[in-house]
Picture 1: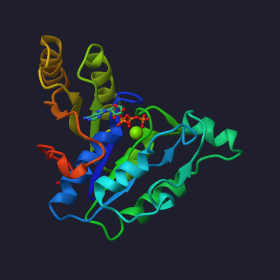
Picture 2: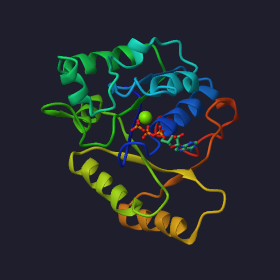
Picture 3: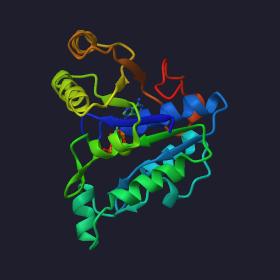
Picture 4: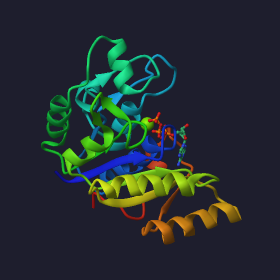
Length: 219
Ligand SMILES: Nc1ncnc2c1ncn2[C@@H]1O[C@H](COP(=O)(O)OP(=O)(O)OP(=O)(O)O)[C@@H](O)[C@H]1O
Ligand SMILES: [Mg+2]
């Protein structure tokens, strides 16, 4: 399956925005893009859920169920949210749902949950799903203080499991980056062996206003 698996250095670091920007970049070039996320939690909280932004950015007609098979209200790790709902996330169902989502599309843009070592079930991590889907990774990371360690840890966790890190995206990259932010990019490039690309702050209401990402692993 052609596509990309977007992970991040943790939760709330910009995975959805990066996945949406990749989906938008591909869709704007006329590609049929499907989006996928194994599980979403926190649907009780206000705001646009991840799958809705992904669908808008990709110009996809997929249903909620087709994009994200497991959906939970409480803002908790997926394995816990599933347990609270009296069930367990089934890796076979995730693999089948991702394959079904990608069928007929030119590319599949998949967003993980939290970071690579977040459990989906008691013995199946987000990293295991990325490996099973055999998609290259894009890693969303913050530009600011703390990002060197978080990003290098994520790169190492990916490579130690044989995953290809195709892209690191620093987001949102400020208009006037500070010395620290510029230095973080260079340090990740030299110690991580991959040069991060940057994503400016986007108007999330209007994907047509977004710049194309310079390189997309799903190209
Ligand atoms: N380039 C950007 N433009 C606009 N907003 C951004 C950008 N990058 C990050 N953000 C903001 O940072 C916050 C976190 O982004 P996002 O929801 O993409 O994170 P996430 O890693 O997907 O979170 P979760 O773990 O909940 O899935 C959001 O409020 C988002 O709007
Ligand atoms: Mg998200």
